[in-house]
Image 1 (cartoon, rainbow, N blue to C red):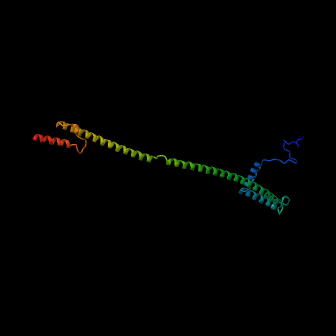
Image 2: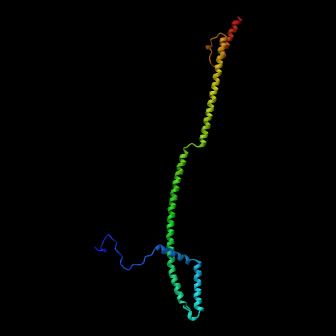
Image 3: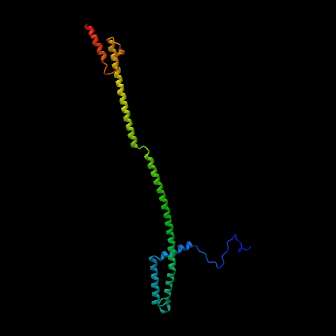
Length: 214
């Protein structure tokens, strides 16, 4: 099998081979020319060339004039320049449009990423706010500690009052016992009620006084 009939290899193109060039390099070169043609420097240089051309072909001796009046060759050159300038400008505009499209796509991609990040952060902040709503704050802890301290103080105050009452009761019992022993009474016959503390003692004293008078 020959090379043209083999199926595992691409078929070679027939016909004359055109010279290959780098599209990117040609595009950069065309953009450079288009940018230069859009500057005041190019207009100034082109104006100088046209004035010199017209002046030479008007004021120079007749034998030295290469483009006499009507300036056909100058018109041809300017037409050729315009015919090349338009495609170069269009090529530069197309490349600029491609760059703008890529930049717009990149901006949209970054905007989408920023939107997604913003939504994620918003959800995280909302979750944190919900979680913090269930956590005790510093003010709440302070108020609870203050309330607990007040309750402890009240409890300690009540215990202190109860201890003082018990101490007073013990002193009263001891005093009643001593008084009962002094009058030869049974010390266990007296009650602990504060309202009836002095009643047995008074009765015993009254009876003791009657017996003495009799």
